[in-house]
Image (tube, one colour):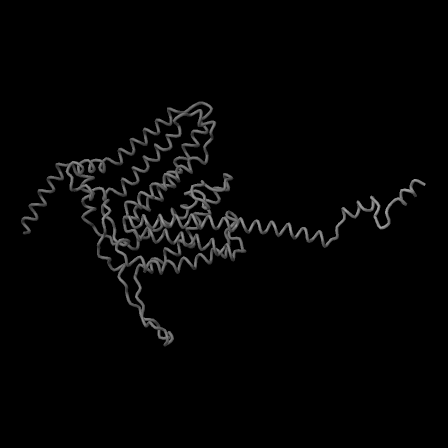
Length: 426
């Protein structure tokens, strides 16, 4: 009876609690699919928003870097060299910090200074060799400074070796029990950093003083290749290129290669018209440059083939010989230089970190931006020395050899003998 009265108490048309519960928890399959699609759509929209936000941040920071870079190009060789030095310091700092362990460092006071001792010793050795000629040409008007610089250049290798040995002794003296493995690993890591940073980026400085053209064009090609690969991959990328860098695609790689080759040919012609970019700097001054551009930057006329249509306005084109060399640089920047980035990606994966640093918003650290640039700088230096530079014996080269190998008395004797020879010739 109670069961019947309970059933009868229910209002007609109102479902029973048990049945109602079943209805509350059951949904049609179409409703479930609709909810899933909404959730997936929300996730996709969120991912797209993050994707575009990342691109926007990267674009803003790139524009700021480009503006600063153009300003330094306008200021000249010495300021560009200073920029390279600053970048090297930031790169060294990022790389030094990668394998640091706070507990071990606290037990080894002053050990971190040893890294920077080796760093600045390597800097003195590298730039002392590359810039000795510019130093000599800068100080020839001051007798005392001329003697001082001459002595530094002559004994530069010994000074650097003494500084390195001092660091080596410092390292041995500071060895502590239970920290041997960490200290020796840091010692080896420091030397690997010096090899990677200085053995490659020092060639960048040599390229700068051979003419800003040989620094600006390769650096621009790497930047163009990187940006083109990013945008082609962003909008068209579907096929993965290499496992070390999952975001790289074949579409981005091919699109960037074509863009870089075309840019190399066009930019070489544009930059070749400015003596500020093409003239080599033979001292450490910052004044304007004037020089004979030489045959490398002198346009040559080429007749177009007869099958060109009649409506085409030109029958011949003017091409600088350097534009053909620029194609070689563009090919290297497109095909080989990206492997510097792949190497960095593999290195980061091996040690399980995303970026070398966070100095540049949207890009990571300076090392993340310079991996391909360093590979490119070495190639440009070797290519320039092998195929472009005219091998001649200049006054600056002879003067450098005199300062390095002759004493002051021998230099006076040479001066007197040259004076006699010139007097007889007159």
